[in-house]
Image 1 (cartoon, each protein chain N blue to C red):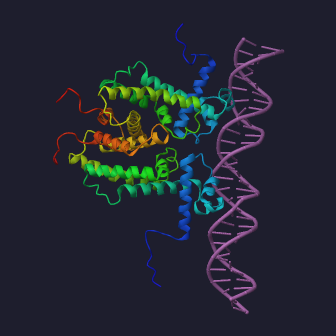
Image 2: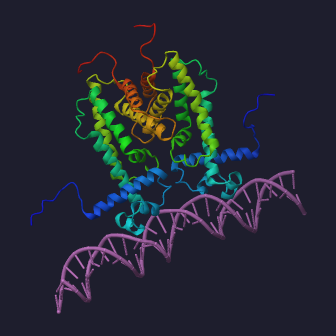
Image 3: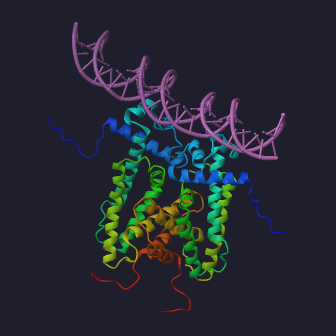
Length: 208
Length: 208
DNA sequence: AGTTACGGAATGAACATTCATTCATTGTCT
DNA sequence: AGACAATGAATGAATGTTCATTCCGTAACT
């Protein structure tokens, strides 16, 4: 028997309809905001009746938490799965950046939704806990990176993460709001600029 | 009677009450979000009746735009007034950073409000225009900085601004959400890290 | 037939906005 | 000056609308 996953992977009709509703809700939330979207349009987008939606979710708040957890989970999977965070390197950083951009590009609604501020008052403890599940491994990676001399240690790890994450979000937000268009080269350059901000520049032992 | 009309600051009773309502609205919006706050609590916070509020603002949307413009205006004043953007330098960058942190620290509600995403669907053309009034001078500064070899020119100006702005916002957002506490040293270090991201690290260039 | 899922009109709560009225200030008349 | 009228700012209960949620008739299964 494999190690028990926290959520049993059910693929019955019921859970498929749940997913269907969650994904529809994500689309509508991303477009109109949380308070801005009534429940009926969500049901319509999902192709179900309002009553049906309420069969699957107790309330709008429950639905919001489900959408949040689903998006956060997918982000975490995409970022961290099969990744050896314990041995930071420049290529690990590039890898993380590539995964982040892939997420922002392929699941723009989820990316946008996660960055919305107004869901914070809705989140239940479980959802808040999931927030940590992503941050803690990244924090560990930064600590190790600083200890090994890869990253500069002038900033405390949480600060370095906030700075980097903010920069990344800022770039995509600017694109979404139309202040900017991003091609692949732009993203590579932004990546390198971010690296400059957090890397250790007096490399021990190497000299150019 | 020759009344020397003070052109800029209108300081009659009416405009003072407008300001009073705008500031109260900013406080409540910053705490509960835009859709999350009914109009009556805003009136209560301002110490006026609901009807009075509607004497000064046609609608909630009008009020939101007024709050936005007021906050944006104050940010712009604080950032750009008496600043020679046409001659970028490291000390100009430090100066800008200091002004930004002062704004985030002294007017946290305004800073937070401006970063909320959900007002974007409310903003009228005039408010959107004001957005540009801040971005364009900054963009010009970056262009000059790149031409003079102070800043690296691998990123296009808009991208550099988005990256820097995002990093700054990310740091303060992390603090507001409790992921972080920031003392003055932290902010200085964050500033230096941001500088590394956008500065030109080759030898000083000359004009082309 | 019995059970479960579905849908969308119906319900009531919360909201933005209005409006009939009160209140305060200023001007006018004696 | 004092009494009175006129103006318009201020108010919050009343209004119509929008929303989250419920409920019940119908359809689809077993």
